[in-house]
Length: 148
Image (cartoon, rainbow, N blue to C red; front, side, top):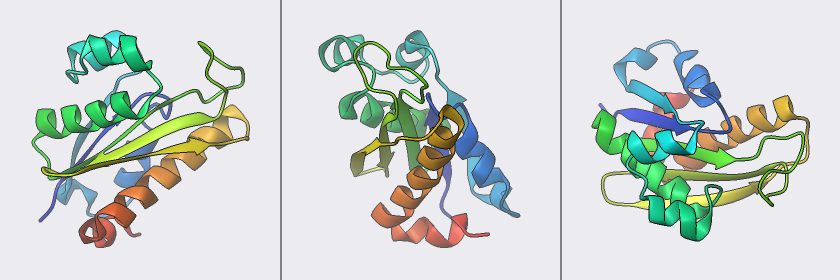
């Protein structure tokens, strides 16, 4: 049985919520870190502060480091992470609706940028849905785990 964990910033735990809505998810979902603050990304998930300084907290590099950090922390086979600006306004020069999603296994990591244009709530919901979809696209072995 494969295991999954999440590290969420702008989605605030919504991905974990969607996963745990699936009956039987306790067999494969180990947990989540809602790393809303940068210091939690660094201190808990092990994101190097240099990455944050060089690329910004909303970047592929930070998203990938978050995913790998939570995968190691939870000792899972796969992980999903999100970092971005849900809105309604821009933050630190990053446009509202910009979200980086990363997924990883023990040997591979992939990331993608989303450019969403809904309300804050819509952006959180859409980013969460697309993050789960991205995981199953990159790692088809987990598709059956995440279906309702």
